[in-house]
Image (cartoon, rainbow, N blue to C red; front, side):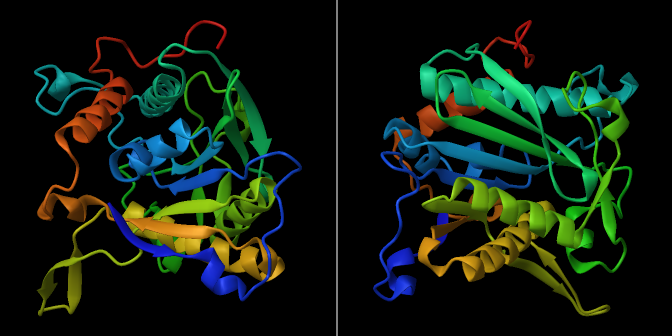
Length: 301
């Protein structure tokens, strides 16, 4: 659900917004921590953008490789399974491509063109475009492995434990193997997002919640437990920092910015109709392979 919505019109003080391109519609751009945050938290708004024929661009900061085991938590074979971080990351990316293909074309197996995108600090990202549609997915592939607890997006933001965060090349990615592991600094992430904003000049930018609810305050060490994944919060911080720099460069192109509640939504009253909720979960099922198909790209896609 949306947390806040900043109106571009109120900030422009009468300055007319310039056209994105002659005859073209400015896209709606999502900045996410993981390759499902847009489905879980930014839909059905995202789905309505797609239905309206608006171009969409989604940027995923991390691979979300977790423990590298692509099995349900209660799967009996999970305890004996070996981690495959690159394979699990690839499955998540294939799943989100399938979900977008289903939302846009009705066919989860619609073809994509996969390519690479050189971003800041010699890092190579993956960029996928849906054939015949104005849909673009950009994967920065920053690490988020549970076995590397300090290597987190949140720590990169604060720079208390790390000053750079490495990338992970998903299995089968067009990213050159020699680029696997290259790292981005805090400024590198912000600069990359600024470059993306300048390239696409979005009318709307959707980000995660920068101020999640507090679950508890720990008196013994003055720490706070928050009701969300720290990757979500850090992704919001990076997005807001990039937006601030982007808007300073060209005040005539201020996008509308919408922020979305993350896992805190489990404590809120349901606000979708039965039909809207069913449709949302239908595309989540496509993403997770619960629709009877495996999360893998078609040959040649």
